[in-house]
Image 1 (cartoon, rainbow, N blue to C red):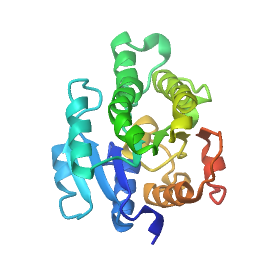
Image 2 (image 1 turned 180 degrees about the vertical axis):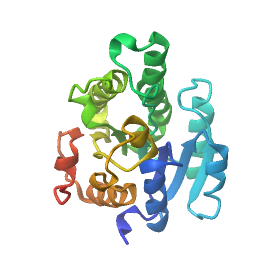
Image 3 (image 1 turned 45 degrees about the vertical axis):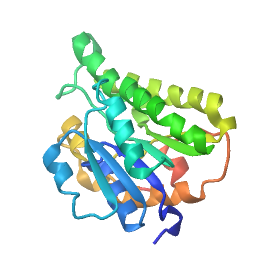
Image 4 (image 1 turned 30 degrees about the horizontal axis):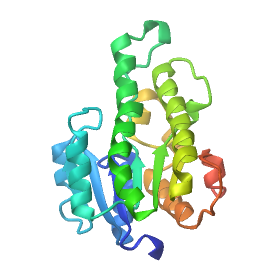
Length: 240
C-alpha cells in the first residue's frame, strides 16, 4: 500500500466511471479520504460500501451547483489536499468535423471541460490557500497537443485546459499551490470507446493500472516548474 495517501483529503470529479472511479477506489484502499462528484445517482450509490469515499451528486457544468459542491466537499473533508479535475465531455458521437459541429455543442464541451473545472477550482482554492498547500491535477489528453480530425471541440478544450493549468501555476505556485496537467494516455473507458468504437482494447491502458501508477508518481514527483506531463513523461515504465 502507498502510505503517502493515508488521510490525504481528495476531491475527484467524474468519480463514478473510467479513471475517476479507478482513482477513487485506489485511494480508498490507500486510506485517503475521498469526495467524488458525479451526475449519475445510481453509480454514486454504488460507493456507499466504501468507508473512505463520500459521494456528492452534482454537475460541474452547471454553475449553480458549484458553490454547493465546494461547500459540501470542504464540509466533509475539512480541507482539500488534492483536486482531480477529471470529468470530461467528448461532444456528440460519432465525432464530427469542426465545420459540421454545432456551436452549441462546442459551447457545452468548453463548459464541461474548461469553464466548469475553472469554477470548481476557484471555489476550492481559498481552502488550499488558507493551509498554504494543495495540488490540482487537471486531466489532459494527447489531443491537447495533436490535431486529430474530428476531435476539434475536445482538443480545443483540453489545449485551453493545459494553458489554464500553466497560468494558475505561475500565479499561485509561490503560495504553495501546485498545478499539474496530466495526460493519462489512451484508456479502456466508455468515453474512449464512444469516440473510437472499433478500438482494439488490447492497445488501451486499464484505468485501474493508470490510477495506481499515477498516484505513485504524484507521491514521489519532485518539485519542479514543469506543469504538463505526457503519458510517457509521468510514467516511464509504461510501454505498448
